[in-house]
Image (tube, rainbow, N blue to C red; front, side):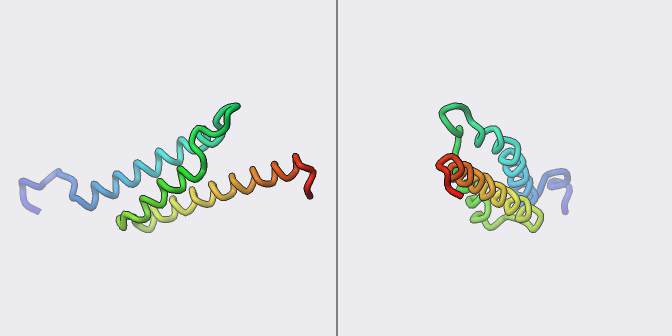
Length: 94
């Protein structure tokens, strides 16, 4: 590394940092967004799933980030499953 690049983040580091920040943001806002209000979720699970898949499709996700994204995708699946179970229970299905 030469002196003029000293202290500057390298492109790979910068991209990884942006992905980390995006994952942290998504993890932070998903619960509130899915809970929504009387009209329903602010953004549905499909919206968050698409954002996570865009990160995966970037080709810049490291192993740790892949685990975080997978965890969030599983949480979205569980949320939708819980909604389906609750809807069936309201209709009297077992």
